[in-house]
Every structure is written in C-alpha cells, then in structure tokens.
Length: 450
Ligand code: PFF
Image (cartoon, rainbow, N blue to C red; front, side):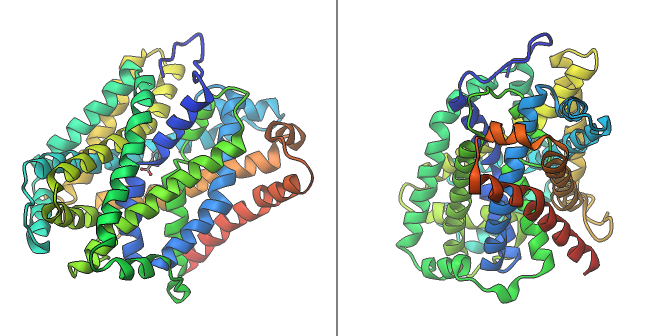
C-alpha cells in the first residue's frame, strides 16, 4: 500500500482486501511448514489438532484483529492504544501491538531464509538438476545447499531485497493484482501434483496418514505446535491482520471474509500434504525429516514425471511468489510503525527494518552450517526464532488480542458491527469470551508443566 502520513490509505475494494489477506495467509506456512510439522508429529493427530485450533481459536482471533484494526486505523501499537483509550481502558494495551510487531519482525528473519531456498530451487529444477535422481541424490543436493553458508546468504539476500523493494516502493497494490492470477495457478499446480501422486504408489498410505484419526499420538506438545501453527498460517498474533484491518472499509463483512480466508488457507495446506507425503512413502523417505521435507521429496517427483522440469520450475516459482506476498505482510507493520512513530520516511523505515531483519536471518542460516554447534537450550538460532515466535509470541499476543476484544471492548457495538443476533451472537460470545482464550491458556499451561 502506498501510505502517506496525512491520509491513511484504504483498500480499493473488499476483493482487494481478501486477496491481500489470502496473500499473507497462504505462504511457506502452508506448503513448507505444515507438511513437515505433520511429519514431525506423526500425522493425523497434528492435522486434527490443527483443524480444531483453526476453527475455535484462529477464526475468532482473525475477526477480532481485523475489527480492532478497522477501529484504530493506524499501526498496531497506536491502534491498540487508541482503541483502548476510546473504550476508557488503559493505554498500555498498546503493548499487544508491540509484541505483535516484534513477532512479525522475528519471523521474517527466518522466513526469508526459506524463501531463499525456494529461489535457489527454481534455478536447480529449471536446469534439470534432478532429472532421474533418486531420494539419496536429491537429499544430498539439499544437504550441500545447507552446508554452504555463502549459497544460503546469497539467496536469503535476494529474497529480502525483493521484499524490501516491494514494501519500500509501496507497490503492494500491484502485487494484489498479480496475486489474482498467480495464487489460483499455485492451487492448480498443487492439484496437478496431487493428481500425479494419486496415480502412483503411496497415495492411499498418505491419505490414511493424514486423515485417519489416531488420537493416541495426541500430546500436549503436539497441541502447542498445532496452536502455534494455526497462528502462523493465518498470520495472526503479530499485528499483521491488525495493520491490514486498518486499511479496511466499513462495508466488508468480517465473518464471511474470515471464513473464506480460512477455508482457502486450509485447503492449500492439506493439498500440500497430499502432494508431499505420497512421494515420501513411495520413496521410503523419513516423514519426520524436518524443515527440508518439501525440498527432499518433491524434486524426486519432478525428476521423474513427464514435463517435470516445467511443472517443478513453475511450482518453486509460485511458492516463492506466495512467500513474497507473505513476507511483504511481515515487513509492513514494522515499516508502518517506524514511519508513523519516527521522522523517518517510508524508504528509510524500510531500509532500517529490513537491514536488521536481514542480519538476524544471517545468524539463522549460519545455524545450519558454521554455527551448527552454537545452541541455546539445545536449539540452534533458526529453531530458537521459529519456536520463540510460533510457540510463545504469537499465541500470547493472540490471547491478549482476543481478551481485549471480548472482555474490554463494548460488546454492543461489536454485535452491530458483526451483524449478529440471537443464537449466532450467543455462540460467538461463548467462543470469543471463553473457548478461544481458555484453549490457548490450557494448551500453554499443560505444555509448560509437561
Ligand atoms: N501466514 C504465512 C504463511 O503461512 O506462510 C506466513 C506468515 C505471514 C506468518 C505473515 C506470519 C505473518 F505475520
């Protein structure tokens, strides 16, 4: 969005807003992170926990963040401060906006590293590096990339520069337009891969693995991971949707829009699971191999299917695109904050924020190679950033947002704004006041005690 200081811009249409929200939600979280988290947590138990978290916690918090953002019309810190003040509540609610901005800031540092992997894989797949390769060879290529600090740095830098340029120039609108074409294309390619898998061995096994409930595997840790991922994938708990809500016109129906964004986001994640796990099982790979999962599985299929080079190249191109539409949303709140709270111009704010994030990203990528031995409580820097944000910062910020929304704001005006009455309103209140906050607290406490 091109923002100038006097006038806070608005989305040109509610459709533009939906696109931007979907653009932020659908990204590496769906295609890179969701499958590997499913793999690390043993399959369907995670999927089920995740679906619950999305419906009962993600949905109300997404709506709450948009509504608060629309009331506040500023960056997340000022929005929370102002909305609290106008409700006669403490201005220290502004802290919720601040922890949110911090979350987005930290996430972008490692998100950009993975965006860099995707960029690197565009070049590898398009030059036929994987043609005819088996699982071992594809795995070796991935390991070699991780071992090379310079390769990772170059691609992380390219990704970060792309993100910063788009945010700095303020051409997010252009991105929205492009997203209109490219996001559906990403969906189509995913389904082509799923179709290819359906005709090969391993598909049935993958379907069982993902969808036949095996609740015996459900642990507190998996619940927390699923909760954290629900926040991550919907881009909530970090001020982004608050910032986006601040550009939102009055006429947009928040509940309907949230439902649409959530369904799209979830369908893409599940399709990614069906695109990846059959290949994993078919090739005897380890589903629990962590963040490299899509990079060691999909290239095997691209290397053997007809038209694999084209489909594979397009796939990594589109993932990169999906990652960019998310990364610009990760950078936006920090930039918006610096721009509105300091005397820096938009360009300067973008340069400052992205340079610090870039440096942090370098530290994250070094944990795969040169700094592999440096750990904090058993975790490398990359994992620390990931866990700190997904498991703590996002759920706690989201919890504060929903508590503020359901317990501190005037409910009558919210009822009007959401246009709910009768049973629907009662149900909404039960979920927003009790189910969502209690779920976050319970998951949190059980994990801390385990
Ligand atoms: N939701 C994005 C994804 O699933 O890839 C990632 C993301 C974007 C996370 C924006 C957080 C965020 F604030």
